[in-house]
Image: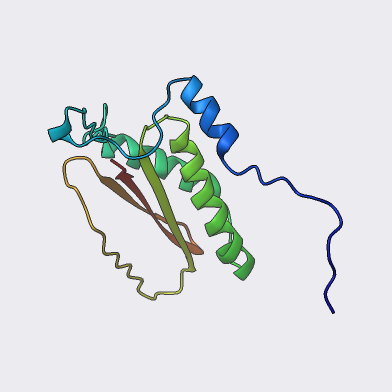
Length: 156
């Protein structure tokens, strides 16, 4: 069963946008090649940041956040599940306030019960040693052992 529309639809397409762009002298379409006298512009990538974060300062602030969050707590599964998420978010928010332009911040926090077991963490990253940074902090009290890692990766 076919239904035929009784209203006429005017096909507009991009024609009005093209007229507005041409009136504003905006180039539309392909660029001229260099050999034809046009100027080829390259993307403006900034390969180095204005300021590289100091890992000592980062580590001190991470220790402070971990100590405030886990000072007098005892282990529970609720703490391990939600506390690690909350502490990781607190670490990222603290460093976002420093306005580190073009840095991507990734925080990982692990909380475990302290009952004489070992804990290890392994992370592999593609790294630019001049501008990328990381910091690692451990925290322990009588019931809880925690590890936190913050990666600050520069996006060019």
